[in-house]
Amino acid sequence: MLNDDLMGQMLAGLRPKSGNRSKAMARIEELHKRTVSLYGEGLPRFKVEFNLRGRTAGMMHSVRIGEDYEVEKVRFNEAIMNTPANTDQFLARTVPHEFAHAVQYGLFNGEAEYRQAHGKGWRNIMRDLGVEDVTRCHTYDTKAARRGNYYPYKCDGCGYETEFSQRRHNKVLRGQSLYGCGKCGGALVCAA
Image (cartoon, rainbow, N blue to C red):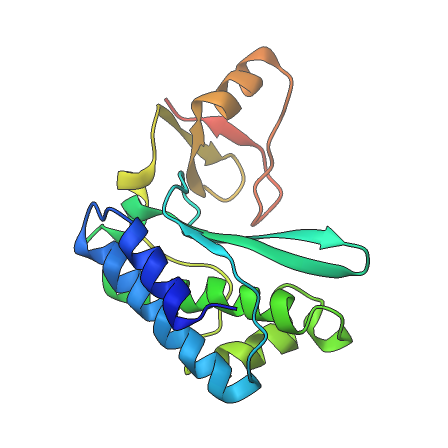
């Protein structure tokens, strides 16, 4: 369970690169207090890290122990969080999103309603935490968080445009993988 002493230790142990880490930790503390008032004590302790990379904004890690899950840590993408256009929504939506997963697996992991990652149980937890927008995916600008080379690809059917990472692009060049458009099923071809 995240208690006041643990929260203080976690906050003291972090060396913020920005004030946004402190804001995220304060948001987690606020969510924890709300969780205790709604569901009582019992949320297991977990780490909070700011080392996630790429396009993923946040992630909750758990370990399965028999029929139950133990929440290990919650990770956030600091580069996405620190992009000024993303910060407010990140703190308002992404932090509670991952915290809700910790509640889901830490308090309710054995109950059928809470087994599906973004199912009814998770959506109810989000609403209980005061978040009305319970959509699964974010729409952040992730360019600042991405590393490496990216190659433009276009669907030969509907014209949908996307980018492939260096790794995915190399697979296409070697003939190991062909990727289809998720919208129409057409072939994605390099537009460079």
